[in-house]
Amino acid sequence: MTGYSTHKVKSAPFLVKVTHSKRRGHFTMPVQHYHEHYEIYYLLNGERNYFIQDRIYAIKKGDIVLIYKNVVHRTIDSSIPDHERLLVDFTDEALNAVSSKERALLLQAFDMNSPVIRLEPYEQIMVEHLLNKMLQEEQAKAPGYNICLRAYLLELLVLLVRLRGQKRKSLAETIEASDPLHQKISEIVQYINGHYSQELSLTTLSKTFYISPYYLSRLFKRVTGFNFVEYLNLIRVKEAQKLLQGTDMKIIEVAQRVGFGSVAHFGRTFKSITSLSPSDYRKTFKSTREPATEG
DNA sequence: ATTGTACTTTGACTTCCTGG
DNA sequence: CCAGGAAGTCAAAGTACAAT
Image 1 (cartoon, rainbow, N blue to C red):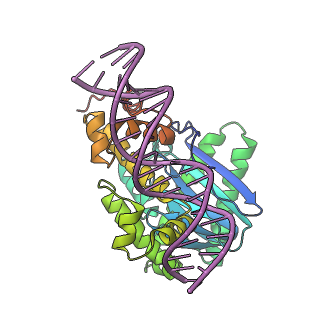
Image 2 (image 1 turned 45 degrees about the horizontal axis):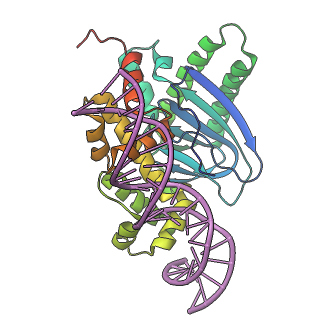
Image 3 (image 1 turned 30 degrees about the horizontal axis):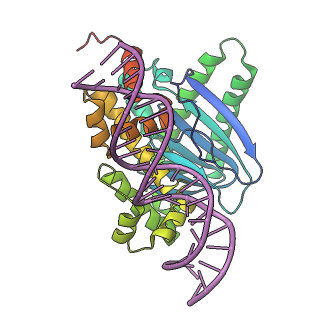
């Protein structure tokens, strides 16, 4: 299985969505690894390793993980396979009711440098209470449930911002897996994130990091959940999406800029990840956007 | 824990072709 | 001219298994 080959990556039709899932046995997300919406992940039971951006976090029961939009992430099995989690996904539009100043405050709950908040038991109770209310609304779908969900979301974000404020020290170091292998891969991922526009191969990487290419290949997969090429393509396509949105660069220029030597191959890879060709992607983005009057 | 072998699968890139 | 699909080739990556 190749992970993401055929799934659709359409723009999210929801504002706020709550999902609960309980997994038995080993499991890794069969879903998109980055997306336009924000994600709040709360682990009710079990343990998971969570790859976010360029680090691996050992997530325990009662941890809350906040994924900013378009950040690459993936959960990976840890030694304990069973787990239970709650997921809150929401889009920028879900925060339309508040002013931009308030929005900025709410989004302080998301911190790229420490995406994980380890909650004290009494904090867990508060958060779980709120999340359960959200889940009930989501499931019952009584009239106005969407309004409730948005209201609860605001409450949740305020709560998280306050909790973050109280926790003065960044807990990233303690939550980050102390496994030296993880640190090694983390370094390598950071290297890839910074050098994706150049030619990168398993062999060149293995030379810069003094590790055999065979071992690197297997280690990378085990730790991040991604194959090397799979990850590299993901990063390149993600960057290409930015360029297609934000610039008028020609497709061929975009391809070269993000590290693809051939446009044809770029197009194919882009489509396999986003389900749209680069030009279609640019078109849908431009038509989705309000015909800007502000300049 | 780390590397290598041997094998299969996938990727990278070409070339040629279609259509706007 | 530009975007992109199809098919083919060779190289690289991925992996089950073995060895150190």
